[in-house]
Amino acid sequence: MARSTTTEVDVRIGATIKAFRVAARMTQVELATAVGVTFQQIQKYERGLNRVSAAAMLKLAQTFDCSVLSLYGETELAANTHSERVMLKLWSQLRGPERDAVVAMIREFAKREARPE
Image 1 (cartoon, rainbow, N blue to C red):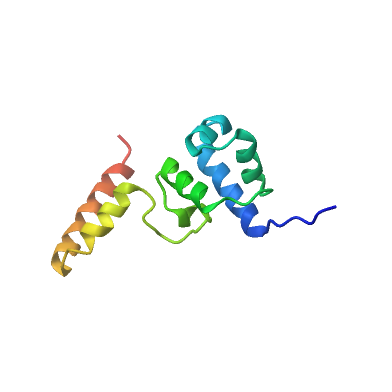
Image 2: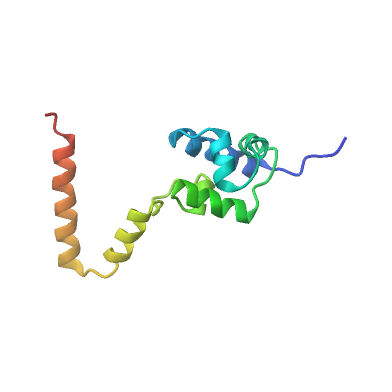
């Protein structure tokens, strides 16, 4: 019997892919079509039975509009969506007082969202 070449990392990536797919309300067939693989391959990725190629990782990240790093289950705050990446790029162009003003504005928006109507 052949020894498996997959690792705990492959299992973690598979679980993350499944979580992203379920959150996106996609079927395995829909995800497979978007990535360009068979639904059986998606099943194997999700169970950690097959390693995900670099090309497939890029397609998955594009499909889910996230970073490749987030498919590794990275929990650090990172810019996963296009909007977040744009915000971080713009943020780097601001100076101290401008940053303080943006933070204050976001806090106000967050307070409004938290209030019951």
